[in-house]
Image (cartoon, rainbow, N blue to C red; front, side, top):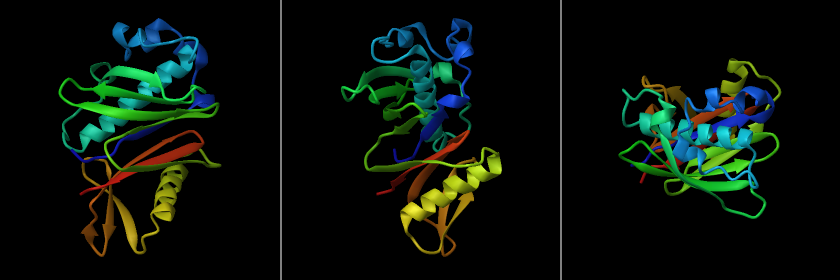
Length: 194
C-alpha cells in the first residue's frame, strides 16, 4: 500500500492540565497503550500527544484507500513505541487499525511533535510560520512542499475525499501527499508511487 500520512502538534498550543487528565486521554488511549509510557523518557503530556499524532497520521494514510473511514482514534492502536536515540527526541513505533500495521517515526522537541507513517522512501519537512489562521497555514504548507519538490508547473488540488493531489499538465502525479498544521507549524510528507 502506497500512501502518505503525517501530523504535527504545536506543544505551546495544547492545554497541559487537561492533557494530563485520564478523563481526557482515555478517550483515545487504551490502558495497553498507556503501559508504553516511560516517565523517565517522556512526559505524560508529550506521550499523549505523540500517540495522538501517530493515530492521526495513520488515519490520513488509511483514508486514501478507505474513503468511508471515520477518525476513531481509540480504534487505532499504537502497538510499539521506543526511543530511537539516547536524547529521547526521536521515536519509532507501530500503529494498527486491526488489519494493517503501519510503522511511524516521530520527532519531538520543545516546540512540536511531528509524526510520519514510514512506509518506504518518505520525504517530509516541518516549518514554523508567522500566522495561525487556517488560510495562512494551508498556503504555507503548500508553498513548503512545492519549494522542496522543485518541480516546475505543479499545482495542488484537493481530492473529493479530502487529501491533497499533485497535478502537472492536467495529469495527476504518482506522489502520495499528506499535509498537517497546528498553530504556528506546518508539515508535509510524501511518497512517490512506484
